[in-house]
Image 1: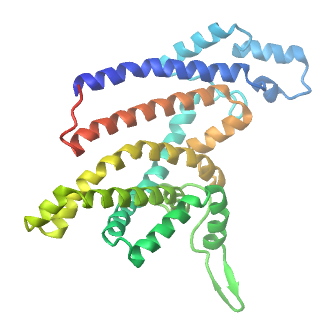
Image 2 (image 1 turned 45 degrees about the vertical axis):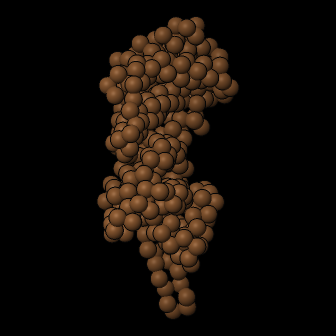
Image 3 (image 1 turned 30 degrees about the vertical axis):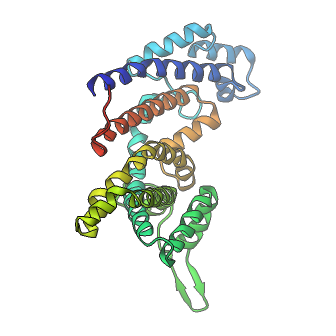
Length: 318
């Protein structure tokens, strides 16, 4: 196990170099110029060239890339040029990453356990009305786009509805961020978690149905074990193996969904920062976000590989 982890970690710098090289090249040679965006389209060319020289954008590509890598290894990802002039990219990410982490943590905390529980009960009650109802909800949850669900839920939950002399609402506050325990987190965390709930309900149901028809489950029942022991100790543990595989992709999908949710509800997280960086051609913010996301993704998948050995003792890494 230790040798396997070391090999995976040794590949991490190689992967980050390739990702940073591609991202840097796309930023340099892609359409648009951050200096031109900062100065305006009608600024005199000599002034634009002077500012470009101050930021080092006039140097050859290799020199710019090596300087960026050298600074990044020391924790310096450069400075914002357009959206937050003069502010360090490292400071911007350090302030906003905890917000996104807390938002996604709340989304996972309610959707992941509930999705697994619904999948288990749906598999145990297969072809019943409960199973049909859960499958319909899963299809609905997967089909609804986040960008279309947000305004509908916001209108339904955050507005005051009047029916003649009778009125109800608003039920939830919308916009801003006051921490993961504030009511402002409920609506965005609910929207983010719907996809996770649907995916894990569906996958858990499929895995449990497959496991429950196995020979070792029939043997456990033949030995007289109680049903909760058969389901919890034998069936669920084997059904968790395919579920562990998709956890990494689910977390990555949550951060991708944060782009839209944070921008819509005015949450000052990494998602809204990345959205602003993409629309304003902030090279250094885009590259720093890409490198950090790639690092987190690789480490999460490494953690999942390690978890396999605990979920299924038969798995061994050479």
